Image (cartoon, rainbow, N blue to C red; front, side, top):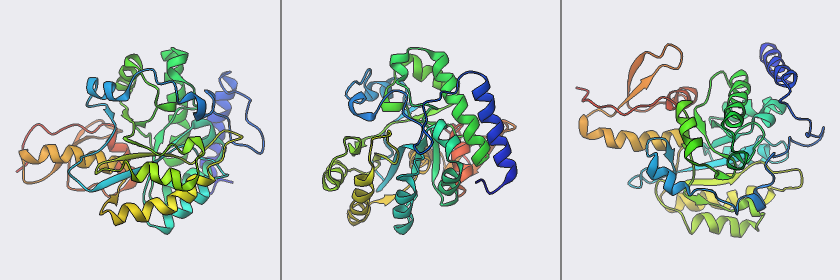
Length: 317
């Protein structure tokens, strides 16, 4: 049950609107999280339409696979939640180790489990958009589907968390030029990854941990999953995380959220212009320019502002 009545009413209204529009599907089960529309990660992930490395080269200010390799920082990211079977346990591990992460959430599951989203936010994590039903966007080949999936998720998340995230990760990581260009028009930053835990293969915990630790590097964005399809199991992910976190720290690396990691990347490029690291932000409501220097400490402010972050082209004295 929602803690704030107004949020409950707004969330219900948004969900009813989607249902009445004929878009809401009915393949969710009462005791199971809404299903992944494009299918489970395995075997879908073996089909990669366009390399994200190529897209990152084509769209360097929109598609990001990692942060600065000069800083000893990494980011943990989790896809396909919130999932009541696994997300709470995963959050317990992160809280135990005082690690902040970035969660790319499905809109359908966000609508089903708003309390889990609120817990994610309350514990200092960042939320991104992972579409509503987790379709294979490239296979769908329909920009209208992409926009609908993104905006429905954005609307649901806004009701629960009070702002519109501008971080996006494509289901299965599947993208092409047309999709990226549409995301640019929607003012989204596309977040990929440089280290894949392959936990979606439901490997033993020791193998999941090795996949991360053996490929680790400064600036790494690490892909893991807190959600699964009806028959999937993320228990091994949770167990692997207990090994991964302390071993990453033993290597001298610290954890940041994706916005922190990428803002650091941008601020390094700005440093040559000034003794003060600055960020040129656009207010997400009034669209008026704001100069904000040094670190952004608020979780909400970081995520909101990140969607419209621009590089400073001038010196701040």
